[in-house]
Length: 109
Image 1 (cartoon, rainbow, N blue to C red):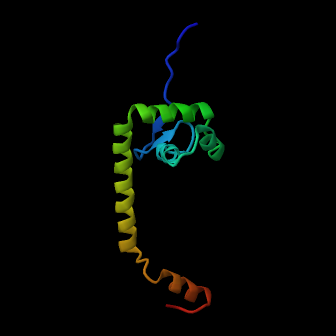
Image 2 (image 1 turned 120 degrees about the vertical axis):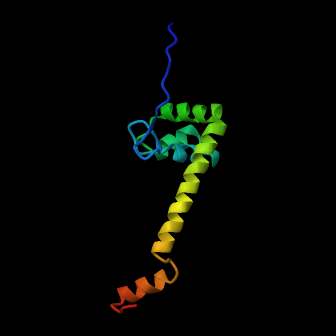
Image 3 (image 1 turned 90 degrees about the horizontal axis):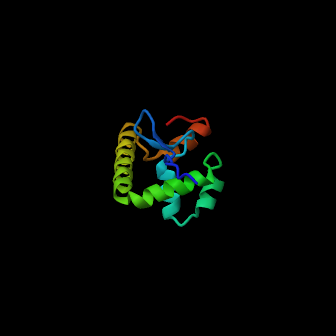
């Protein structure tokens, strides 16, 4: 038996987001599901484009490089929070329901 080197099925896209190879599923998604208690089988079932073996590889990668992955996830969360603040500053969410309901009824506000 020859022991082969396996490649972790992760790729970084043009925006710096780490995704499962050949899918749109992010590393964040797999790790968060695992942290919430989902099994590899449950994750693979929920994200049908990800192979079960790949889920196991990614969980193993996370467990071996927890600090590095947690740092990446923290950076992604900060970027998401910053983007949300920018969007809220640009499009004030206060009173949005009322504005949408008024628009639906044909009124202007």
